[in-house]
Image (cartoon, rainbow, N blue to C red; front, side, top):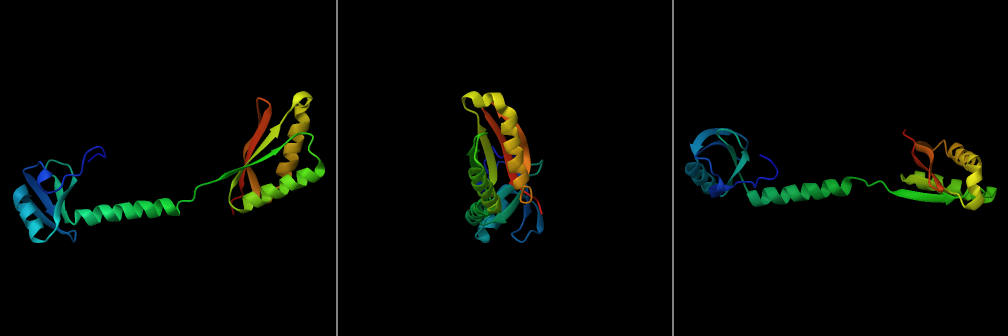
Length: 171
């Protein structure tokens, strides 16, 4: 059954005959739809179509509880999946050594928290004539954080900015 199809339960099942599985997963056999619905009602359960074949497979279950459990599992899975945050560190090719040390410290702190770090080197005015100096400063930063981070995306020019991405080292 595709996701676009609605789940068919009880009298919304269109097949005349259905293969029935009980609430414990045991195969009971093939029944007429109305007889299968009557059996489900006797157990205070719903008859839910779980597969669409020549003879559709239907299962006895509490459909409301089933939907609740699915939503609960989806919410738990979403909460447990960690979203990667990208922090940004900006600098220029003429950055002073003290400021460079601050940027290195920030990168190490962000990487230590499990974040990815996008480093942006901004070139203003005459700095565009010295892209090689900017690339050297980027390489200095990469070398300084090499024990905690690896380069995911090498430094490359994007207009007046040189951008690269650092991620935590594996292991």
